Length: 249
Image (tube, rainbow, N blue to C red; front, side, top):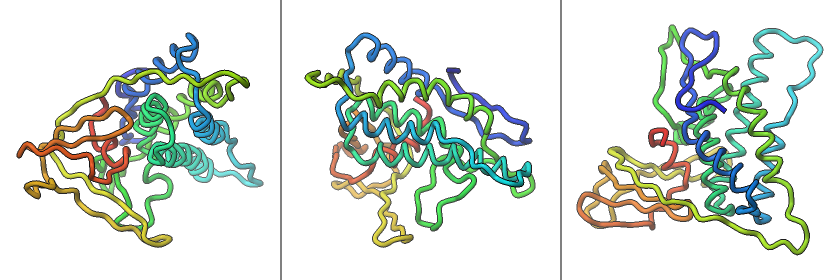
């Protein structure tokens, strides 16, 4: 698996593929699994199986295939990988090492957040900085995304394998991370089908919303520290609503 930031594809304005976190977390997961230091619990295996199904999904069979429909099908498969990964990351049921891995996968596939099908509502989550212009739109690096699939399939196949009967799950510790973020965090909700609501998070003490926030996360809990000195974890933010706004750690 390649490391750092990658930008591939024949498009005139490809978006960068951020794989630094994925390289780190995937490598760590392989080592822990091979050494027997991580024996996934049922929730981890179930989430991995769902993601694995998206990773291994074939492209649809069509009677007539054009360059455009093939490109859309390829990007739709990658977008479904991202959306399934985000669902299980934000559900909060997996262990910290599994959450760290899911978050890294989501970061790598973030260019497909709006491609080929953008969020349906203006208040739906939108991550990353828009790239390109109307005359030269940004497109995801499809070939680079597909190049990640073989290694991820092998890794998630191991994670998805249920532990033999009588084997007690073992979860390795995860090192907390810290970062300063000068910006706003928004909490999203869906009060009804197809309806999104968004709220900017403010400091419970001073009401400030723009930070710079001190973000601390151990993949169980996200803590936000305000410049005024107040610290809170009762903000209601999902992992993705914080992680996907940050640089590739």
